[in-house]
Structures are given as C-alpha cells and as structure tokens.
Image (cartoon, rainbow, N blue to C red; front, side):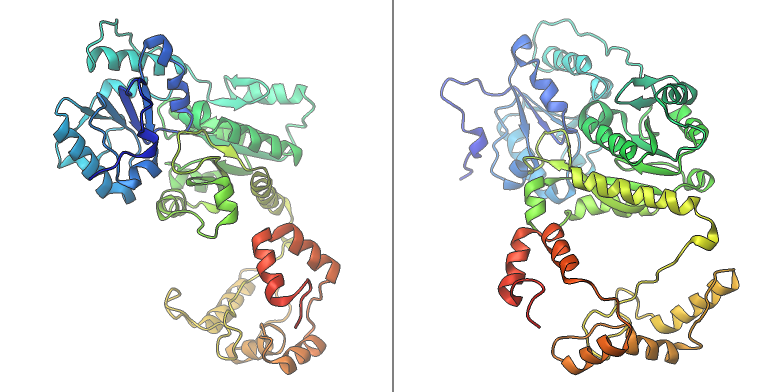
Length: 468
C-alpha cells in the first residue's frame, strides 16, 4: 500500500495541482507561484526529500516538468514515474533540460525544446511558460506567446545594475572614490539563472564583503549559458582580476585560466540539509554535491572550495539560496589572502608544508596510507626541499636525508598522546614549541567550536583548558 506523502494530503475541497515541478533552480518556483491566481492553475513543487521518500502518487497531475535529476534518487524516480504513467496514461512528463539519461529507456519522458526557451531568463517568461503549458498540454484556449527577448548586461553590481562594458564599470567606480588603477580586483562569476533567481543574494553578499576588504569587485555572467558567452573571456582579460570566485560549476578552458594567472575559488552551496542542520551536523556535503561542485572543478584548476550558501528549509526545497554571512566573510578573506600573496615580493613570501601525525604513536609519523599510495613521505619531502632550493627558494637549513628529517620531527615536530606524559613534558621543555596563552585558547574554543561539540569536550575533559 502506498500512503500519500503528508505534503500531498489535500484539504477537502482544495484543487488538486495541475502541474508539478522537479529539480528547478532555487527561486524559480516561487516566481511561478505568483501566476497561479491570474492563470487559474494549481502548481506543486516536489522536493528532493519528498521524492526520496518513495511514497508519492503522481498520477493525478496533468504535467510534470523535470529540470535537475539527482542521481542518488534514480531508482525512486523510475519507480514513481512508471507507476504514475501506468495509472494515468494521459500524464505528460517533460524534461526542461533534455538531460534525463537515467529515465530514457523507460520511454515515458518527453523533451520539448520550446519549453527551455522560456525557462530561467525572466519572470515574464515563466508566466508565458505556464500559458504555453496550459494551452499545449492541458487544452486551455489561451494564446501562446513567444518567449520575450531578454537582453542581459554581462557585468553586474548591486548598486548600479548592468554595465555595457568594463570601462563603464571602472568609470563608475572611479566616481565612487575607487583608485581603479591600483586597487586590488576580484571577480564573481555567475550563471544567468543564478543571478536572476537562484543566487542574487549570494552574489550581492560576496561583492559587499569584498568591498569591505577594500577590494574592487564586480560580477560577470560566465560561459555556462549563451547570454554574453562570446564577450566573457575578453571582458575578464580586460578587467584583469587578481582572484575569481565562481558561484557554481564552470566550463572555462584550462588554457584560459592559465593565461589569466589568477586563483579560482568556489562559493559552494548545499540544499539537502538546511543551514541549521548543516551547522549542527557532521555529515558535510552529500556525495553528489562533492562530485558536482568540487571534484569536477578541481580538474579545471579550482582551489579552496568553501561553503557560501544554503537553504533555510533543506530537503531539496524550491528556495533561492541564502548567503551564510560568516562563511562569505571567510571565503572573501581567503581570496584576499591570495591577492595579498600575489602582490608580495618573492623574498617576503613564506611556504608551510603540512604533514600528518594522526595516531600519535611513534610509528605513525608521516606514515604512508592507502589513499596516499603508501608514498614514502620523508624521502619525498627531502626531494621537494632540494628542488625548491634549486629553483631559488631560500632554505637556510634543510635536513641532509630522511633520517635527519625524522630525527628533527621526533625531537620537535610531532604530536604526543596524554598517555606519554614524560615525552610530552620533554617536548614542551626542550622542543621549542609554540605556546598558546590560555585566554587565547578559551577564546578560540568559545568562538569557533559549535555548542554541542563544546559540551561534549567539557564533559570529557573539564572546563577549558581541560584536565590533562
């Protein structure tokens, strides 16, 4: 027996929805809902959480539109769509994006190229999409209107709107008091649909935070969509940013990035968890988001993917993304650090090499692991130091071989468990450790560690700095 999902428990007398949507960009459905009364149509959004429940009976809808499908829901999609089509052969399931490989063999999903022309560019085109759907698929006697022509300015700033070109933005910034010739510059790249519907608040928050850091910043519509794609690379080169923040996946060529010579960071988002759940939980991003937003972008040279936004409800809701202020600030400060590093003279730069000592035992120091292909870390580090010195890095004192390196680390560069108080005492007295004032530690503990985690630490170790 398939029970109705709670969200679908219809109030007696309430109209059953005519059209359902799956996997829309955030903010799109909210705009569609504005036209329900005008067009006398009932709309419903099927969240990822509702889909994953597997308890939906979709047969009462007349049309279901699909945009983004989540691969981890593949089997559920197949089951509920097949069931709905079997109960209601008149149901039309239409892919907006044209990407529905996981369902193609079922022969129940259609692709209407006209639908894509209405999607994601403006509210008016969303209204016309509903008219098109009502007329073509539901049989209403309505005049089908063509998609309105939407002209986007590729360059955007929240205090002005769209600029025709880079010089217009620089001239405007100069009038606002910016030293445009010498100020550090950052660029926010954004897809059209994200700027209009899904992430306008995120883009604005990034620009505002960069300007707080005295960094001249503007957003540009990138090459992931047709609007402005031909102009994009030329405008980026003309603007010449010292750091680029991407707000979604990018299709830029690696050769373009190599020529630009700027670090590419990512403001990533999540929608499976709410922002509150993400803060309280320890799951991190779901695997699909990691693949889509991090792994594929590393292949293009992206660095430092940082959380920038999420949704208030979670569950794959229809919301536009909400920027997370302290995460936005953190990402911008990281980008500012990269800009500052580029501006330093080489002799002023410093390099830190991070190594592992995870298990706190004598045999664990820099030990190889399966994920590291059991690489001989000490020997590799010696080779790295030698090569750095060879190409001009100033290394005043380096170990001669891996045995000397390990002896240095044993003396003053390892972690020691509380079960070896004698070793810990020797390291503190003779190993030249960096000592942290108790007040500083307590400040970090209270400001940076979530409350639930703090409670667990205090329960086990006592009030900070703890019992050792």
